[in-house]
Length: 310
Length: 312
Image (tube, rainbow over the protein chains, first blue to last red):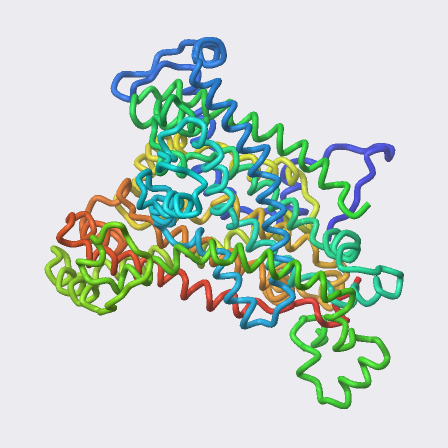
């Protein structure tokens, strides 16, 4: 299919565009439908947003060019952005890796069962992602009076003497949000791991046992994980996009703005400017910074994952 | 093309004496191989951890089912209880009465949803897989750039891109049509990434042998690549179904006749306390459909690489 051209060969000339297209005709035809649409509905909007981030735009008047102003204001003057940046990094550092490990652990255990049981267990663990109003449960558990399930339990056990206003107390907001985010985050990564485990060649386990693999942990590290590296990469990217973009749970449980901005994240800050105050230039600058953060993290993670199974 | 190359022959389909022979000769894994490297203590520990977590994970499901069966007085009971005491189906009959009073016949909303969800899902799975195959297995100029664009695009917040996207959809003249929801859904980044990762795992020899036998790239894609990444596209179908099913289309669809069921159902739940029963039934239906689809897809995810012909 593809003929390897050696750049060092004498008389090498760059092939013309037409020739390249002809040679890889099938490849380009196959990717064309996707990438034409992708250009219109994703690439263009992203580029336009980046341009907007250098303007002042309230969506009623024409945008006016302000250079780096939005970025300077964001990084130097905006205290709330710094709070939300700190919270987002806490989310990313704690929920990202923990949730990733849990996804993998649960997928791995569930995979041991037969098909029927596996399907039911997968549904149970995927339930928070597929039930639209999953937060409702947590509102019941965390109600601030003594009828809230958590307060009721702690009062009965004698741990506390009076009910705690979980979502109105600054110190509790982040820990609670982290727990809920972990609970909610077994989604995309988890299902792709389940599917990935199905494609591991079973005969590799037997070969590994003959080679001296002694227990399931060794088997996981030396056989299973290296065999599903592509899925691990995919899961990591999904985890990054999720844990850096935490917003819904904060808004639904702690409100936006939350008490003293204790639950503010970069995306709640972005929504505040983009949907409430209609300052699109500023909101786009926040989105661009968030994007750069995620890209940097992604680079780092992909490097780490390269070491799996070594 | 031999049967084994297609990845269609499962060991269990073979006659028993042949199965036994293959297993004895270690050509295919023995039946016991699944229990390799497993200790009882390890099993106990892992299942214990999972049992505790499962109780928490299943809560939203339990609540949706119970709420849908609660009579009004139990729905407004304070302090709220998770489990229903006097289950009844009145909420559903209330909902059907309300459906018949809707402005546009309810079947019209249902048809809109079927078109948007069905086309958005099937189209995405096909178009994204088709693009993923060359990205995973061919070499052509521009490949690394195109692929990293897709991965990076998932990291840009959609909150800010939806305004330029709205402008582009208006400019293309597809505003207020099904296409305004369907076309952008065709090119979501995640699907292509997922498919490409799975296709990368396929051994090159599989495609090479098909090429030698005269298959062209399109045939290889349909007859060899896609059957062998079935767990991947079934999983992608689940994601995309959920995504399209949850879309109310309120941003792009203005004609009442074009709006999906999700929108109509939300209008019913917006009726306040008097409709709390019907709203609980709506919540149940909105969750039940993707769950049914999930169960169908998940249970048909079968081990694909069980045949020895698949090895490199």
